[in-house]
Image (cartoon, rainbow, N blue to C red; front, side):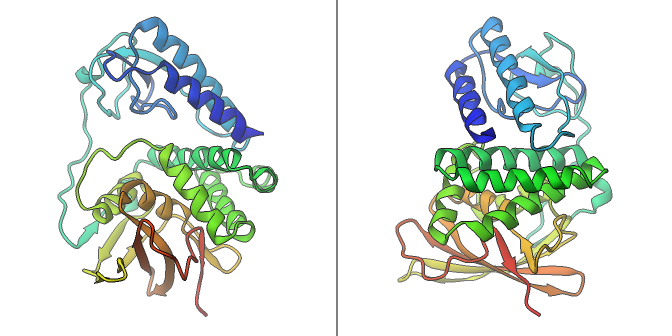
Length: 313
């Protein structure tokens, strides 16, 4: 199973990592840090090279579900971990790479950015990162039949969708829909919580909702969002937030709108608050999402829409 292979490779890479190390892995063509080595440092160049080989194997395994997953020319760099959109040279310090990343001011509650400014490579890498961690979670949770069903649908799509950017999105939509139809509410929460632990720790510790939507906007999942102040019930330890999202990259499928990547990112940033349900309705050319959030340990009466949410007619 793909998920089993991914789990074993990630665990091996993590066993090699050392937070105090001075070496890291990057793609020399793009300057990106390759999944699943994002955020990891290694004690020596030799150990980093072993991690690089394992990272190549991980991406090769993930390529079984998406043959068009970009190939990364992984090299070992020495120095601080810095994201850079520029190619880097072997043995160069990542901290020396120049960056022409656009600076976007953050206004509350409206965040705008057009898709013309979005790095499609970042969106594709995000899609693959979500798929990889979910495959791992399915494998660790024993959902082999579900994983097989998702893989079968992937194969069908890969044979019919030509454009690689479109295929990344269609595959993520397919995963969300298949899981929504095959997992119970409790199983859904288990998979999301497990997958979230496999993602890098959030780099900022601010408001988890704002960090979630800023992160998703930056990777290109949508172009803009407007967030309401929301309501909270202190006694029930729940809160509700409405977010209007424009230029959402995922499309409706089988009467529902895929929400898996949003729910997963909420789990990653949520810490004490995680989503219990997601509802959506179309508003002009945008989507209006209603997120019901809960604190850990609170019983959930409604746990729908975390993977794909029905679109009202």
